Length: 285
Image (tube, rainbow, N blue to C red; front, side, top):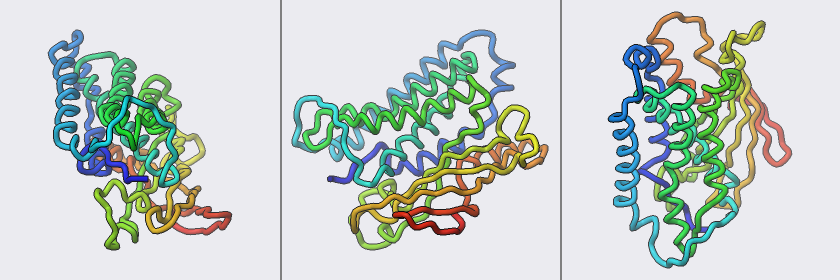
């Protein structure tokens, strides 16, 4: 299967940028300024999305959709990387949803509505690429890709609607793989699936009222990666590890809240186990 190419020069870089922007405190300032929906800001947000989509198509269209073409079709394609290509969609949907929700806060929408509109934009950010794929004979509109993106995008909205869900976080970890460092035909950094690890972290300290007797700064994470996917068929690597929740560290300073929110988008290696083809290994993951 041909290597799939995604929006932008690097989805990992985009994810880190969006993670940085999610650290901006917005709610107190927005509450002071808002007396009604700012229609001009709504138009600016929608125009920004349209401009981003148009620019992405203009810059990358020729490489995304080289012939052959055919009528629009939806595919339930298999993953060439045992799900890593799906998980990158979920992670980007999650990050885009967060930053889009902050933009809707800025437009003075209610906090829950801003969250759900952010989720919609988290899903929509990948639509131009997938729709174009739908007319490509060798690809197709990937229903699994969009389902994973939707799953990631909905979670930040759920955080706003149901505060108890804040304990569930999507986190990433990346280190260049041996495949990426070797002279192999990698067109883009985001295709280094063997270097990417994706985690669903459960951090009770993020719930309203904290974690009780459990330390607010400690959680558990469940992760997935592959050791390779180009040099041979990939195999699943599953992880169960401890997770560091920096927002649970009792430091009462505004700068720390911002800094911790940024870094809590990343899963830092912690004691745990890795399961690969039935073999269990202890380590820092």
